[in-house]
Figure 1: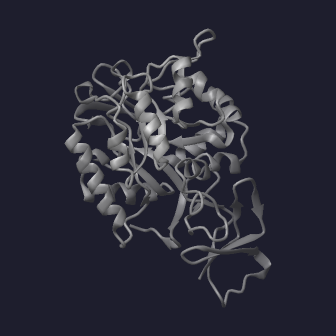
Figure 2 (figure 1 turned 45 degrees about the horizontal axis):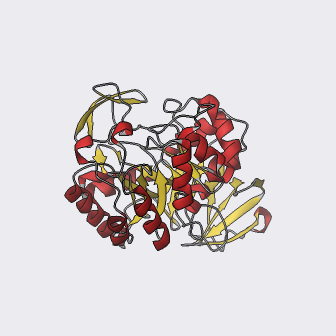
Figure 3 (figure 1 turned 135 degrees about the vertical axis):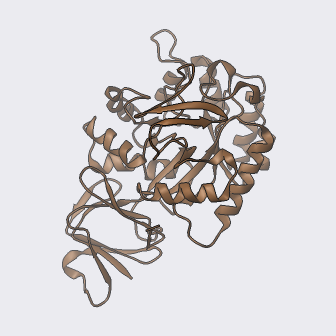
Length: 379
């Protein structure tokens, strides 16, 4: 049994001092620090740093030169190990608009890795299927030749591994797809890469959309007479919203407003591509050439192509550019996304009975240690 002491304990709603966390595979108890018996536990001194829940990235394509769409088991494990060092303990490998046979291969690969009993790093919750059911006019970095009409049957057939998927509700077949998947009840429906009007977006929500893919990006904007998808997502409390808080995809001046409107429905993501954790240079996304320069990843025509954000950096950016408390900022990358994909009973916060997915980080959210199911990840 392990016990972390001398920490600032980040709970869902507050940060506590003078407490200690006792855990094995699961969190056993939270006790007063003065009651810790060093003869009973393996004591870990946090040296006054934050002890927070493991982060949950529900939208990440790649990292360290690998990509979930490659369909490589070794690649997924490289990603899982790498992002664990950034404090991510659970994640959704995210596919994009590629050939359908390649999407199916990526799904099968994720199934196999997810089922492995030997630890491989951050745990796979399931796939985030970002394509191919998008609108060509808002495709962003999604290759147009592989875009298909929305297909609810395909999502339902793969609901054992798909946690959430993106759809443009205004596309032909969108209504049938959304209603069918919502009725099935196993997969979170997200609207994104969409040219829907405000009314069309609200129709999508009426049919079953409950999430928004990287808010502001690749969707109709918020205008005073045409509120668009952004307006629909921000104004409906049933809908959770992803935010890429890298200060490039969305101006940091909007973070405070978005959190004020969405609160517990705000989910920080990275949307990271294979260039994440790598030096500047030339990479690919969905087979398309991408140039990484600093925090920017662009196609040859200047289209934004994902990010190289680390999720702990997203927490830092949110915290430093708002008046949020530490607990509120961390929640946007832990319990909020866990709740969005229906995993909050097991992960997302430091609570007795939940899995011991715990990180130790400094005041700048640099991660010192990551525990997954109670074991420190060191690879």
